[in-house]
Length: 593
Image (cartoon, rainbow, N blue to C red; front, side, top):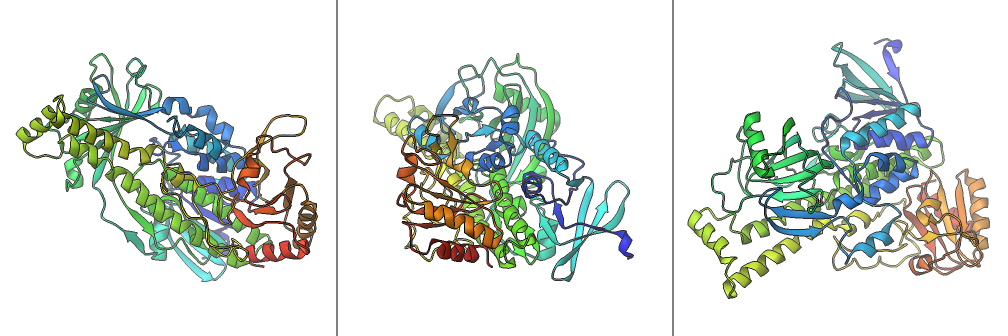
């Protein structure tokens, strides 16, 4: 093929979902441009992912996209509860606080981040990301399918792609290739990356509808509602129960229909006519006055799959291409975004000569263990619901036995009390899904891009790893959030906002001027920007609530070095005699120089 027949670019991203589109945005924030291709004709047509948590939103905040997201997202106040009910209009069996609204956990959420959880459907997130990428110089080619790759040399990838409109194939040459092409990733297949698979939990059916239920949710505020009929024996196999999810308040909804646990259904068993889908939707709404318009129906497999590794040479895979799981705990798109945020700065630093190529090996070492945790937690979140189903007798195949169990709930005596207590305990077990602050914020990294030579063992994990946020500056952990201000108070600023923005950041305090001087000298010596700030009494920023003093875990004259992705790279408990030499050695180690 003639040279002029090959499209050339430094960076090629396959897939324009949350992982690929956010990667383009993060790379653009470093001044990098490239080509993004997607087999789809445009951005997402159905809402799919929707919970955007603090960790994901912090990444978008770093490049100035947080407000764009908040402008179109449903705010946290509409996500206050998750409910269990016979129908949206009918009797309610239970409800729990969710997404930080439980008074027991609210302080922990406020302490964790300057951001809040929001409900941002993928149909609204993807246009924000692709618009930013285009405005920053990226070329996006929809209707373009990745077919195969070859690598004629260690630093060149040739990707063969198909234009779905013209049905013509052509080649794209790039220095790096990024496979963010979803659960059926062709890039992962081309690399023959092994997938670690556990038995799936069957099929689910998404039915997207327009239905104004604003009058029904006035006293039932929440974005997730489990709807089921415990005594029902003849439910359609595809519609045993449903998680009714708010898409837009309160007139657009996703009915996620589930088969009974353990049911071995083939895809054909989930097929039904639109009339059957609508009939089940109307039954689960429970109010005949509500007009329902079916907009879309699709099936999906409940997977528990993670790639054994995420990269091979100059090809990197991320997002659903590498971790596939159900939406429980709302971890999906957030993990995709954080994959991209972790990778973007490393690609830029290597391309610009600020870091050695070995830095890129840290991407898989850091993010693959996170993927394992995420798929495990999301699937456990679904399995946790089996307990309340069992206590209600919903898994009992004998109708008379099931009715007997349900009747016992009305017994005011010991038999009923035991049933009701078991149901309460089973419902409370599910709250790890709706208050998973630990699984969201405790992601820790161990790699050569983290300097651990001055440290002892990491702090022991909290007893409740899912719910409890562990605040620490131990290297490889997320920089703690603390609100700061100036001596004459102005607009408050988070420690999160001092870090990031494509550069390293060093935080110190009174007596730490030598660290600031070292940061400037090392910046000049290595050509790597290290911003530095002193926090404390009459410093650059005042620790007005003394939160940073409680969270920094180093002395006032010590320092915390933070990577561009806002993860702690290293820390020193106090000042040392050779601050510049020490800091430069740490930076060279982290950057593989």
